[in-house]
Amino acid sequence: QAVTDENIFVATLDTIVKYSLASRTFQNITCERGAGEAFTSLTAGPGGELYVAKYTGKNQLTQIAESVLMKVTADGSCGVPEWAVLPTFRVVRAMALSNDGLFLFLADQAQDLSSATSPNEMQAIRMTVLRNGFTETLKGVGDTTATEEDIEFQNVVDLAIQESEGGTSASADSPRRILVLRASEDFDGSFFLAKVYAAGLTIEMDGETRSTFTGNSVSV
Image 1 (tube, rainbow, N blue to C red):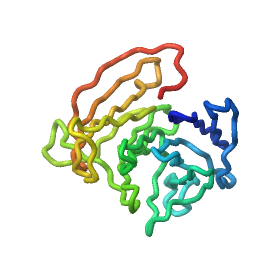
Image 2 (spheres, one colour; image 1 turned 180 degrees about the vertical axis):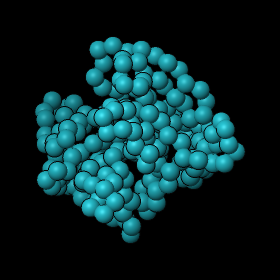
Image 3 (tube, rainbow, N blue to C red; image 1 turned 90 degrees about the vertical axis):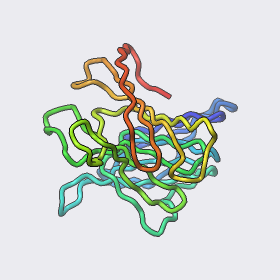
Image 4 (spheres, rainbow, N blue to C red; image 1 turned 30 degrees about the vertical axis):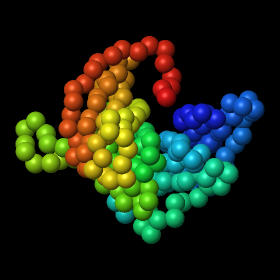
């Protein structure tokens, strides 16, 4: 789901719906979806545009899941972004757009998948530059090595971006805090909130707070 001052957007596996707060009406947004494809996440931009992650199936050669980004303009037109090279993802579980509309952060299924019989899944945090589609995985220094490695979280359910106190910047080096809400192992009803500090493509962990929620179905 995504919320703006004017609308609420919700994506199910096969449908994208817009609810207008002014007119109190629902409207279906049409995006191309083939057999076996599914919408997995969306986020709204400052100009009324939407970015939607669409799962397209497994690669026939590698058998790795693949997803693409779709863009819905403010007038409701849906298509792939006009980038020279389109990034591909695995399965996107959450997305958040920076307030300046320059960067899209995604929680994407990591390579080292859990057992097919387990409900748990690891996600990496990726960043897409919306001007040209350049996408990179955010990295950080782990506890046991000084080498930068991909930062992965388990069972991510939502992302939020907190801009730097000095204001926004068009540079990828602009400091941002990424708030990662993730479910505990086996989804036992507990959630963790992780705050990470991003400057460029490097993440510095800033602790995790364990919270327990009951009866919640969505977060905004």
